[in-house]
Length: 517
Image (tube, rainbow, N blue to C red):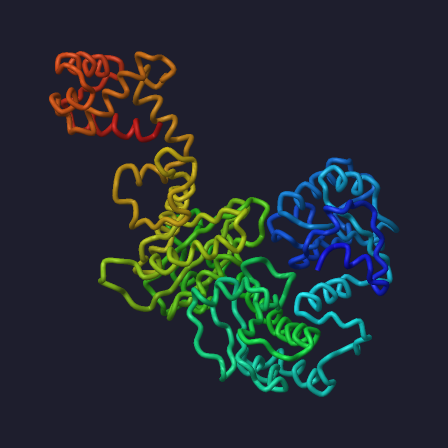
């Protein structure tokens, strides 16, 4: 379906405010309704954007409309449908911004609902091009009533099976954003996580709750074609959305209890009172699940989806309870969880870290514009050692956020575990950048000024010398120098830094300083 197709539908009564032939012939791949001032991170390329313009006010400057439209262009949106109800029309500054950025803009009259636009697009995507008037509902009234009653009180498997029973119970799944199978019908075989994650992005998969974050989405997936009106499938998705919203309310309540637990763990005193800590763990369902692992994740500063992202990731852990919340001292966009493992492992590898590292690329892909960094602690044997585990997780988070692949600006990994920090270089990545810089400057002294060609030469010699374990001959060979020249340069390094490179501790100091540059 193309943008111009919407203008031909009298039922929608849309008005073109700006758009030339290239804009109007763009293909629509989906619809997103939003009233965020910066919606870019929630959009997919090819989507139609519906906005009631609640984010804009007549007193706002032109730059606000410019930022909104620029975000649409960067995300690859095909057109903006702006509602007239909030302001009695569409602001001219918004139309001009769309003109500058090459985004078609259509006005939506008060009597046309956004739902009508969404249904029109998805009906076409599912192949139903009929212009015949449709009944208000495709599902029979008795079926809708039964499903509505079930939505709040039954399990997802039963609800899904009953929802598609009148279709002959075809294979059907409810999948999470990262490919967890939340529900499947008896005719649907188990779906591996990797295949399910691919199915989430298929054109025959419907979002159950479009208002949820990219990480908290549920999806209705039918792997085989069904001869049923698309409207009916959307109504089934709405029933599942009702169940999903109920589960989100429970998650919100659980997050409050988790936040209380984290505040107790992070108390400024040396240790929280054991009794209070025990009660907080019990409230979160973790009282008897030691040892515990702590994980801290950070996304964009203005993004609320970090808690959803961490919650979704931890649902992939088997036989592990967890509590996800926010630390009172957390930076914006940061979430933390305590994971109960119930059993200890002597395998030498952390199964929690392994599972999450394998999952992380898929989780990240669900909102690729928002980098997700995470840090994982070692297991805390008792509740009293949780504070130490929390410090470990935050240190590992800093390491994941700051380490870089050689010769690039990209992080080598967005998720780091304390068990990964097995080298001096890895350990130093967890130190805040400003501290690393200060240490390097003070340890190297005048050599820290690498704008001086002589200093750059001495730093290179020092680096090669330390890399070759202080061997004069191998350093000379690597640099194509005479051994006496190496001796002279190292003496200059010692004089300028005040260090004695015959001493191991001074060698380590300068090695660390080089790594901190």
